[in-house]
Image (cartoon, rainbow, N blue to C red; front, side, top):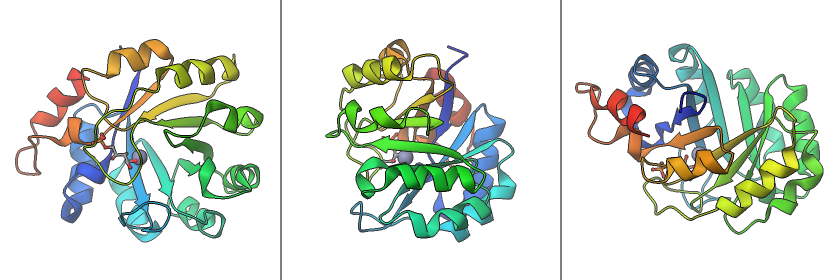
Length: 217
Ligand code: DX5
Ligand code: ZN
């Protein structure tokens, strides 16, 4: 489906070659580039921070979609906005003041996203509909790529209804592949994050599979 955006997650890319990897996925049909920031505190894994985001920014022509799996979030919003993030997504579970966080993200000039872990119900973001530009439904427990997909179809439908006619994206993150993508689109998702399903079989020297992998989703 052409109206569905594919956002490859560079968590599955070659960490020593982010620039070339971003250019390769965009050249081969990626709509957005999804950037996973982990702090070893909110999630049990560490990736990188705003300096790395700033370094890869010139290698991305389109949307840099930054997923913050960190707590606290607020002290770092300005840094990620300055690094050139177009979308900054914070977890609703990351602190008691998600509304303030979303306001700060918009105030910093980025689109504001809120992410929900699999154990968090749609109702947790019901009061945020006019404060967000994107809702990210996690279909794995965040922290690692390549995990088994958890079906959140009912939650996606609920969020779709809560959003109504507002211009709010529904993004799905975790275990997205050619098997799971169709039901997600049907339930109302319009941005699909995919790490292993895009980068599998590839490397900088052999980037050919990326386009095929993206088209298969
Ligand atoms: C998980 C990350 C995801 C991850 C998805 O914590 O937020 O973006 O990279 O990886 P796959 O597509 O391999 O499940
Ligand atoms: Zn992510």
